Length: 612
Picture 1: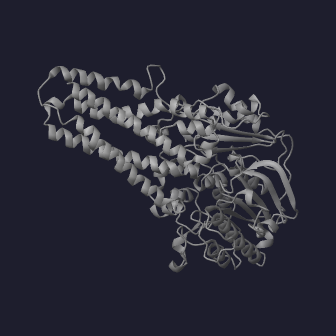
Picture 2: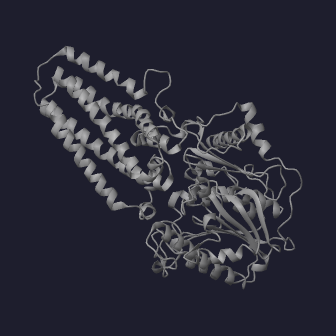
């Protein structure tokens, strides 16, 4: 009996120590972030994270503990084979999660959850997204960790079984079941009322320290189990009676909107160019004397340029619904993944269609990726062009067809006058990972940053050529062109996470007669309401979108990232962690009202998502 109890304790200890080692690897992999921590904070990471390690170890040990409880009645060879097979399977899965998590944090600034699984239905695009990651070192790390873990299992843990005797001993069954029941304590994180959750390990005002304390496998499986299908809003901060009033205050205006679009034309064409990963950080910026976006730098002096525009999220699928439906992004979800929900959204395409426009969507990639196609069908787009509509020899990008060919196709298909004005969206892709370009590099260097900047330079050149050609077309003088990023990018790194969400936006074209730089804070979500009101269409359905040109007491923008939000006002920048329910940054100008308004927007917008 003692041998079996000893085995249970050793088995539980194995997983616990394994997770502690995984945390050491995580801190070492992100050594630049770790260097900024004090020894006290590093100790706190291990001390507070240990509870979550125990919890995950408890989950993984529960079945073996129950199996061992009946081991006196099972043939030893059967028990050994089953327990080792189970453990080997878990080691592979858990190690894969731990190794993947190392790079997921680099890419998205959060610990691995179920989000990457959404993209496995599009393996080609998923591979393109991670191609720039250090795949070989990660694979080597994965193999080494599996080898070491299984060596321990077979050389140390296995030895605890060899001297077992298959003697029926009923009292051990009771002890075994009691020890299995005791696992509930570490699984729940203690004997308190609240079960184990992310807040249980949050202890510092340094966000990286809190993130490092999280157990990656626990976080991954927790996100898979705790889906939002139960209609429970995890972001409940304010009572219902305060919620609507707090949010409505943000939308109050103090006068009539300015008319910035020339309406001498009854129905001007509208073209929205959504630029992949275009960050404000590169505008007017250079590398070794080479401008990154020289064409855009010129264009922004030929229209209405918004210097303080923010993306609603950090992925393209979130941007599409924000731009074309004026709908907020979700921190851990994406409404575009739910066709039944997107069917309830307002659509610019539907509004323009009702007003006699042809509606078109152009993309050089596969519209089935991230469920984009179902959203476009729900929006009644008359024409959808993707990579399948181009000659196969043009599909030279991992994502599909490069931007220059996308722009060329649009020009070619709009050379001749038609009876209908058009509402069209172009979504670029060349500046997406792995940052390939079909032309010789202008910005040299093999670093990820240089490749990214060079891809922006390529798209910029393609855009400049497109605008030049568009100005020669019959429709240019009657067209509004909106150039906006789908989202920003962590590069170039400014050490300020909020900069990663700041994006350029420009309104230009033949119906824009003035060149103005707007300094007020705006969001890409504001395009829907602003555009419809400028063209005197009905805008009342875009309740989450505000008119940029309406005067208001204070300009603001809101954005989501994985289980957190940002709230921006003039001179005020707030980053808030929904998990720990604490601000990540520490801007002394942020008032309790600012925090309340940010929380209210998060709560109300996510509840709206759940209720659809």
